[in-house]
Image (cartoon, rainbow, N blue to C red; front, side):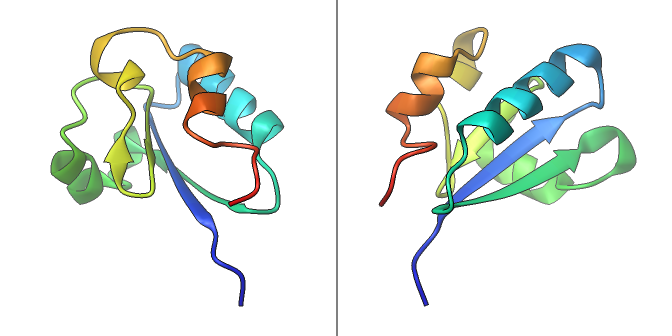
Length: 88
């Protein structure tokens, strides 16, 4: 079994969140295992607390909240720098 990069996306189901979900899905490769949590539907609440999610959309890669999610908008470049879309 091949190891996968775990990508967790925390959303509120809003248009801004949907754009980030689309961006993650476009960048993803076969080495990415993506889970989308809609916090408005009480999905991923415990994970979001554990990662310190304070705003949505937010993304964690392999159990670590991305720095961009702690301070401002999420960019394609920051997702790529986190390894999304690249082989392990």
